[in-house]
Image: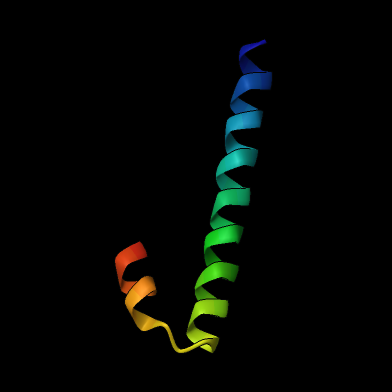
Length: 40
């Protein structure tokens, strides 16, 4: 069970990273640099 939980955690982190990247790219496209700086 431990391995399964670790895999789920890693998958969640990867998805969060992808969402952050896409979100930052879309924000940059909208020229809302303030939100990007706040996120970082």
